[in-house]
Each structure stands twice: as C-alpha cells, then as structure tokens.
Length: 129
Image 1 (cartoon, rainbow, N blue to C red):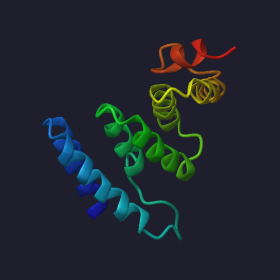
Image 2 (image 1 turned 90 degrees about the vertical axis):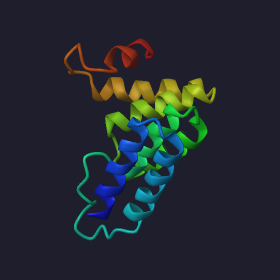
Image 3 (image 1 turned 120 degrees about the horizontal axis):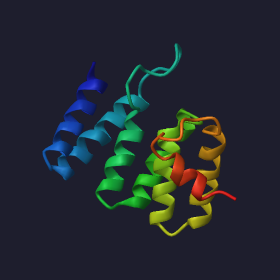
Image 4 (image 1 turned 120 degrees about the vertical axis):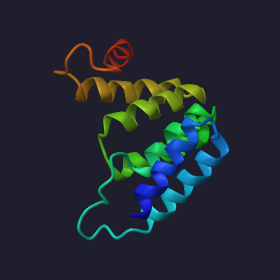
C-alpha cells in the first residue's frame, strides 16, 4: 500500500539524483511505517523504511542522521546484517571508531560461517581481533 509506494518513490527520486526529494519521501515512509499496527508482526516490506532512509542519509553525507535512523531500524529488526553494516559505516563517519569496531565484530560473529564472497564480510573480519 502506501508504505511501499512511498519507499519506491523515494528510491526512484534517489536514483534520479533528486536527493532532497528522496529524503523527504523516505521520511514520510518512516512516519507511515511507525504508525502501522504490529499486532500481527511488522509490515511486509523488502527493506524497512528507517533502513532505507539511513542508507540514503549516508549517501547524502549525513552520517549522524543516518546513524539515528539505522539505530531505529536495528531496534525493530535486531541482528539485521544490512542495518549493522550501515550502522558501522555511519559510526565510522562520525568518528566513533569504537562503535564501528563493535558493530563489525557483531557482524563477523553473525557471519562466522558465511561464504567468503559475502559483501561486507571481509570488512567485518578485518576490523575484529
């Protein structure tokens, strides 16, 4: 419904280089998603809106805002590896190398048996003891 339409519109705007419009639309998507009832589980979406917005904020060189969105996404989807990787990038970009390293360590533990060519795996393993 409305959530998927907003996410798609935001991604299209980003793809067309309309960064401000993309961020505005994805913020609207987070408002819609936040207002949805979770009585029967979270809404079915390919990528939660806070995660999408966080990724676009990272791309727009707004890592502090991205970090807030990705932390919200992680609270809703604990252990989601794409969120953890984005969160590590955001933490590093704001100068919090300790948080970035902790997050990458968490990823390395989750991916302990992953295929060697998994995107992000080499980065996670390189940042852990």
